[in-house]
Length: 152
Image (cartoon, rainbow, N blue to C red; front, side, top):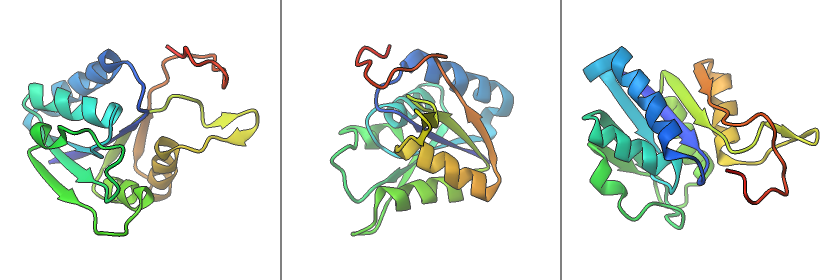
C-alpha cells in the first residue's frame, strides 16, 4: 500500500480535494490508502471522496471529538481511536508516522505578517518535514487576508 496522509482546513472547497485524490487514484490505483484525521472539513471530504472512489481509507480519530465529523465511521475501511488524554498533536503525529507522503490543504500560508500560522494543518506539515516525507501543499489562492471572513 502507498499511504498518503491528508491534512487541511475545516473550510475548503471539496472539489479541489476531490481533484487531487482522483489524480492519486489514477497514479496508484488499488495500492492507494488515504490516512485521514476524522475532523470536519478536508479530513471528512477526503474520506467521503475516497469511499466513493473505492479507495482504502484509514481514519485516526482524536480523543477530543468536538471537531470530529459525526459520520466519520461510514467513510473509512479501517480506523483507530487515539488513547484517552492524547492531543490533536498526537493524532497529527500518528498520521505522519503512517504516511509515505502528505497532501496539505491549508487555508492560509505558513507565514502571515511574518509570523508562523498556528494551525493543525501547518503543525502536521512541519512534522512531515522532520520525517522527510514528500509533501504536496495545495494553495487555492495567492493573496490572503487574515481579516477576510469571505475567504472563498
